[in-house]
Image 1: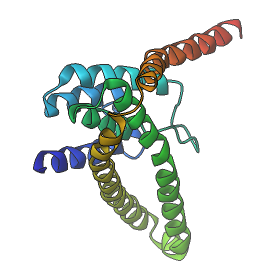
Image 2 (image 1 turned 180 degrees about the vertical axis):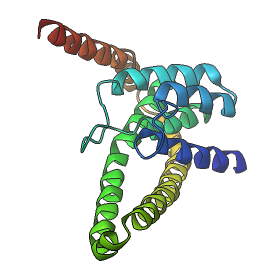
Image 3 (image 1 turned 45 degrees about the horizontal axis):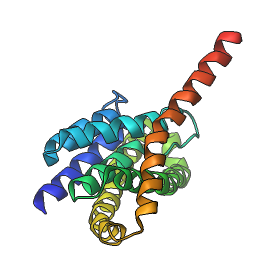
Length: 201
């Protein structure tokens, strides 16, 4: 359990690389898959899940007000579910579902930061650098705490998901596996379509 807590904490810090700090690409699903897979002792599962989630989410770019599904959260939950014994196709969709739901938490966090800025408008006018630094670093710390709590809860819930997923009908397993194998191609075709549009323009 200590390893799980430490990995969730590491993932929460890495998640800042998406938008809040750095943007060095460490938080991309492919990189996260390698890191989390290595830490959990199953690099092959981590790499495969990371690549598949990367290809599925590759069309989403966190620019301006756009909030894409969170690839870091999705990859962590997928890798952890796989390491708990879930088939890769179930682990993949579990991670993607959590990554999609995390968007709403990110929207709430952004709204909270905006309200803080408005509430301290007078202080901003008098000493903008100090106030902005305090709000930014405070928001980043709060984001790490919230992200850690959500990921730890999702990782713990993965065991429950696995328990109920195992006895389902064999046809459902076949359907999920087929969808899992098709998912990265959706991302590739979307990219190809975008590139073709840019070339024509």
